[in-house]
Length: 465
Figure 1 (cartoon, rainbow, N blue to C red):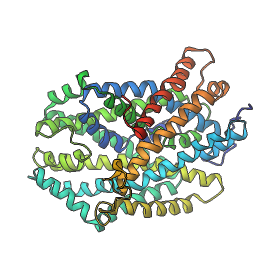
Figure 2 (cartoon, rainbow, N blue to C red; figure 1 turned 90 degrees about the horizontal axis):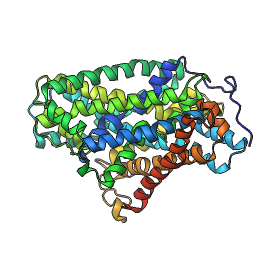
Figure 3 (cartoon, rainbow, N blue to C red; figure 1 turned 90 degrees about the vertical axis):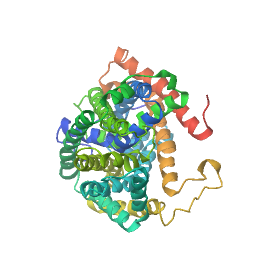
Figure 4 (cartoon, rainbow, N blue to C red; figure 1 turned 120 degrees about the horizontal axis):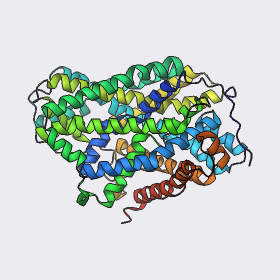
């Protein structure tokens, strides 16, 4: 099998201006609603500390090696995910592996259609918090505010459209003028706001109980289901299988250390998830809320605390600004893979960004309307597992539970079983036979492949335990 020759001048894609900018973009892609919205309530549902410990273990053992693999694939091809896998097939790899390229476009585009809906909620809630709408609310009135916002589809459409087309405008400007400018502004702001919120929450909330909940592992609550949830959350949170890291890797110069970059991305992403827990759970415990509240924890439950706590208007406003920034940095990474593919084909970036954005907006409107006008539409109601899922729920399930894990599995199998030793050694900088190479190889070839296979099997056939 011949090897791909890496040539920094062989691609039409613009390179990152610096390694630090690339890291900010990649961290921003990974850090999103998965950290700030999904991680806290899943940790709450699964007992806290033990779940967090297992989650961190999966990030280290599986997440970092798979991030390295995605970046290596992207830098080796220096094209979009589809272009890179097509290039590898031409160099001798089996045509089957083209599936990675196509899934790496399908996953983010489908994800963007419903992710932008939730991001629209975040923007709307900035103004609700800033206007004092949460003052004095209880569980009933907070739930009513959330339901009222869901029923008001014209306003939801406005916030959803603002978010979607802001993302399109950023991506249409290109890597240097769009992506880099956005992440340089948003990512540092995100970390600053999150640190402020965590400190404030620990000071005004029940810090002792939150620390005990997140740090003290209670392994009696660590069920097989919780372990699978931790693995799935690690993949979801790190954006493994989304396709953005392959694309971002294509914009990297050869001298960048991929193992170091993967470690920094995973560390920053994990810090954000933990800080989110320290920003949320002290407030949850202080005001007698339920840590395992589920997806409604952010939009229906936390406003109760914002309405009662000192400085709640400021705290709540900052919190939803934080959510919006995190959503933006991730949505940029969702749109970029397909635009990179269009650029491979010689098409105009601005034109195709707006065409793709409009397409995603149309599909996204069906996701948005599934909470109001189309709330009675349950297309798969004849299947018991999907009987209660609306269009939004079905798209979320398809992306997060099926397409993303399958693509992550394909990446693990390709990296561990198909990718040549020479290519791995060249891209990762590991000498064949070295300890670093051995650990990466064992993780991707066996541990990741087996672990993600269990996740996929469980999703399709149910819990095997």
